[in-house]
Length: 498
Image 1: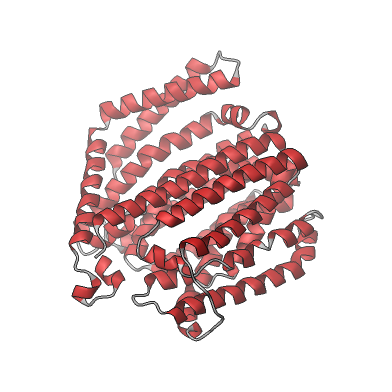
Image 2 (image 1 turned 90 degrees about the horizontal axis):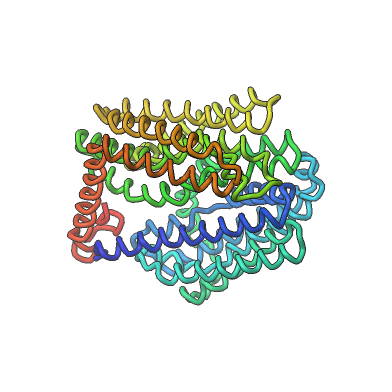
């Protein structure tokens, strides 16, 4: 039986892994921003986007397939591992052959060798132990947690040392290769397994993975199309500024919203047969996300110049207007995550895929309109396209699921008023400060205090909804702990968890 304590413990370890990754990544980025140039970051951004796209193309869905399977045999593990090897090595070879053409198309001669070396991440990742998915299936994340800590810490110190010594983009590429190699080797320490080549169950696994592959390609293209657009229209230095601004703007999403909303999938699934409860859960979720993200987005939009000056330094001044425009992307993304989890919980995967395609077309049209503008204008149009997509997504969710009174209008109004007054107060109190660090400190302090005070004064109902969210999550964990185990109920593990 999977107990609530194990679920909570595994969730805590997952959040800790993400926080450690993001924290070390942020510190590394801030240090590297002062050691390397925006051109270096632009080139590495291109390598990361292209290599990860090939990684998506080579995805066999082995992790999800093994984790979802009720009974896993050695042949299942070895088939998954073999499929990964075949796909990753095939896409590695394709990337080696197409690297010159990609570099020529993007007008980045240095990109060819960087792609060829960076592409080794694909087969290295595939070498990891297939048995590590059994640890995830049983919610035993302790070994994965410590391996991730060692991996990120070792890669962090190596990248900083190489950047100090080489003073170019190769430090980050070599650091990524080292991190992948360390995790692959360490996976056999925490999940021993002697793999063998076999395709015995390849047909069953591919039937599961093919749909996920197609959806992954569309989703990744939609998320990175603006960066590719900027790489084609602007020099590498501008791309570096754009990519850095995008990373900073999305920090609240990756560090708070994504890990924090993971339990929503189970909560929406439990209440899908009760429309009133589902509407209440959606209202609670949107209120909680808005309370965190709306002030973060407004602060980034209003004080982007101070953020860039303090965190990145004088060579990144072009990133400030881009960062301000990216606040719209943060606003859209975090609320869209809630609605996407809602659709997944109701098995509306085809609808979600259709919305992904529509979203990609809207983003492409918006970027085409911004083709003659600056990088900041490209970011602005990307954010506006995202907000339009959010309105469409929300409207379809509320209509197709027959959700009434699910929009938290009162919490939204309180959050909007509190955020506006906080931004005006922070701007007025810091306008006479010349030092960037002092100005940013005053802005953060004033904004935070005013926002929290106003939210506390006018947001009593919002606090109640957050308390209701905690109670609902606790009931969910009690439900999981009281569900009969697979051995007693005869149900597959994923059915028992439902």
